[in-house]
Image (tube, one colour):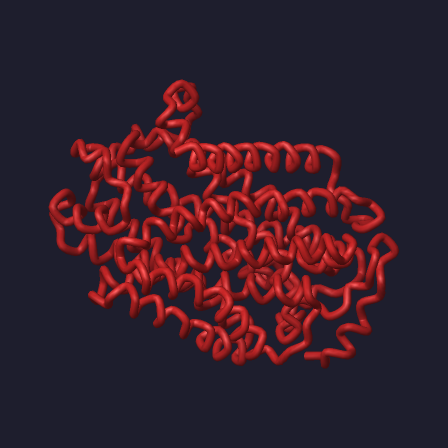
Amino acid sequence: MADRASITAELPEDSGWRRSRGEPPLVDVFRTVRVTDQGSLFRRAMAFVGPGFLVAVGYMDPGNWATSIAGGAQFGYALLTVALMSNIMAIILQSLCARLAIGSGRDLAQACRDAFPRPVAWILWLFAEIAIIATDIAEVVGTAIGLNLLFGIPLELGVIITALDVFLILWLQRLGFRWIEAFIITLLGVIFVCFLLQIAMADPDWGQVIRGFAPTVEIVKNPAMLYLALGIIGATVMPHNLYLHSGIVQTRAYGDSLPEKRQALRFATWDSTTALMFALLINASILILAAATFHASGQTTVAEIGEAHSMLAPLVGSLLAPKLFAIALLCCGLNSTVTATMAGQIVMEGFLDIRLPAWARRLITRVVAIIPAAAVTLYYGAEGTGMLLILSQVVLAFQLPFAIIPLVMFTRDRAKMGAFTAPGWLTVLAALIAAIIICLNVKLLWDLATG
């Protein structure tokens, strides 16, 4: 790997930006994953597999579980179409993140720093940092609940244990960024197998499952169903994923020529699209499991993760089902805390352009994020976890426009993106999606404010 000074020197200032890009994102792993231009198309594409799966983790984090469980319990399979729609939105926005990274050589945080006046950039950094903390609260609480359900560890102690994941990241990254990706993908495989077995035990009505993916006007007509649909969409696209993807795509040594960058963009988009379709399978599995067990038995008020865990065994008729549920939740929480920590590092480095050792940057990021979660959980105990999850979603809803709008602005700007400027149809579609998500989150904020 090139040293820090040479990497920075290799990145000249682009005429469309107010400032030069400075140090690249995640400098200790920047372009460390070798990309070959030899061999079959499949072999070349495989070199880009990984970042998309790290991003996909954020679309199935513990913060999404309660919404999917409630949706399946109340309305059966009807909201599967909403999960599909929100996944399509995510695919389009994440493709813009890859385009920004490869076309400009910047992650979203760096782009904001280099494009906007310093006061604006500092405000955006503050909002992004608050969003990272809110994201980490949901991940930490989810992991702590998983430890509690599986091993009986008190939530307060579980929150502290999750802080150790920063050392796991440091150890894996010393081995290479591919090891982090392998760790994440392995846990995703465990989650998928757990839900596959649980669904097999629940034996859902597959005809209704298929019909659940078809759009229905009932979602709009039924206020309660619409509210949960808004929750599913609003909790799916999260700000930290936009920063994360635009940073980790640049771990690939894809070259600097126009053909090499075009190929990198194509393969990176394939990677994120495939990974997000995998995330859809898991999110749909949560909803299908809730529909096949709780809704089918008339338990339509189930919404809490702990409640769902305790009711699975008698409804499915197997003591293995709740164990698999807890294992999947724990793996999901571990994955989410790892990727959220990396996103926090990208945000801090990108906005502030700080130069600290890798271990110091990660430790600072983790401490900033975990202290609020630990403090509130220790103060309120188990009763405060629900409040924490709700608060985290509200904060994320508030911050989301400050990440999506700059992303769409940058990728449509030919002076900044050159040959990688997003085509007009993609910009219009992304802007429409951004407007929908922002409106839904504003409605969520309004509903919460008015009780």
